[in-house]
Amino acid sequence: IDPDTFRNQQSLYDLTLYNNLIESIEPSTFDSMTNLDSLWLSRNKLVALDANTFSKLANLITLYLDDNHISTIDPAIFRSLEKLQELNLFNNRISSISPEMFSTTVGLKELDLCHNQISCIPSAVFEALPNLAYLDLRFNPMVENEPSLYDNIENLKKLLPSLVMLNQRDARN
Image (cartoon, rainbow, N blue to C red; front, side, top):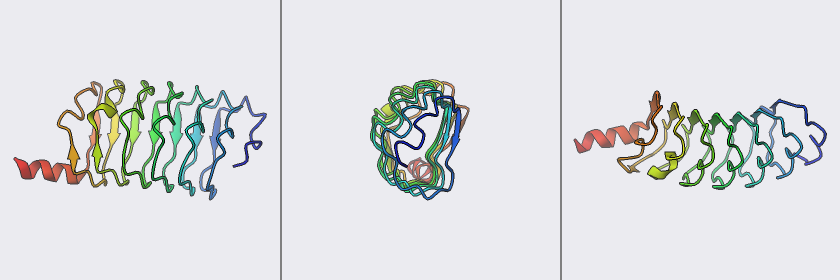
């Protein structure tokens, strides 16, 4: 997406770019959209996102990045999204999650990481998410996780863990 596409769209609150075959987004594309609270980039062909892609979207509440080809995520990409409540990253190619990735998204309530390639999640990943109520990790080849992975998620109401992880836990008992 060209950075000038949304240059004068300060009053826009909801942007849906669903199923547009978008392959890349220039880091400054959304800079003038400071009132944006919902951004849907689902079903595109995104492979990577620059750490500054969402840096000016401090009011963003909902972010959908599902059904893309994202394999790695810069740990700083969500750093300015303190109001983010819903993040969907399902059906990508993400293989690892950095402990710092969600350190500033303290308001996050829903996190969907299902259908990725995540094999291990450090326990520190969820420490900064006291409001997380929904976590979906299904269909990931998670084979190693620290026993305290979910200990700091006080408000978790719905957990959908990886079946591989559950089967391995059952095999140990």
